Image (cartoon, rainbow, N blue to C red; front, side):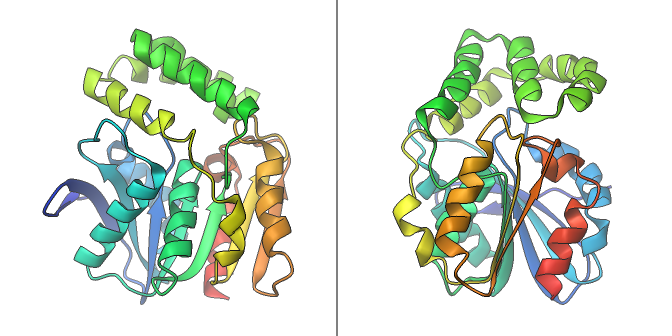
Length: 266
């Protein structure tokens, strides 16, 4: 069973877990969720077992308590504080969705920290069309409508067949969400609005692998293409696009983790 650990700084606490015995360090930053990924630690370790011989893997959560306003840049700076506290240097960094936004911010503002960068189903900024969906999630959360929040979230994030397969699971999980978790979700989602690194994508200095899906109903394929258009002149840039797995291709595409590993060890 995974051991959940806490990093305690002067101003906040942040949970994480680690696995693997490899010589390189891989840090994974997950996306926005109403439930912490710490509760799925054992499943994540199983899914990412392909990494354990090459990497010591750290999966980093958000801070325990959110301030009323919590911009993604501050999420990134808090994550860097934790990485420094843990003594992690020259890391491979992999972020998905909002975790990819945080990872981009870290790679741009702390270039000496990141050795290689993988961005999954993410965006350098969020368009009004994308905000319509995120605002719908926020509205359900503010109403305390946990079931519809999870159903609409799952329907948008996963492909149709996966969503239908796990529909009952989403409903049951929604019943476990606390008021504090809803509050954190709202703050985390609302602060996506002002995130925009479009004019700084070229400031990413490390080798970068961007993975998206043409059927991403959350951030859409154009978000991946924008990052690619800014970096594809570089020989150390790589992109791969799936078809049909949706936003959460990072969870459901069977060869996704192998592609990530192959890029990181090459």
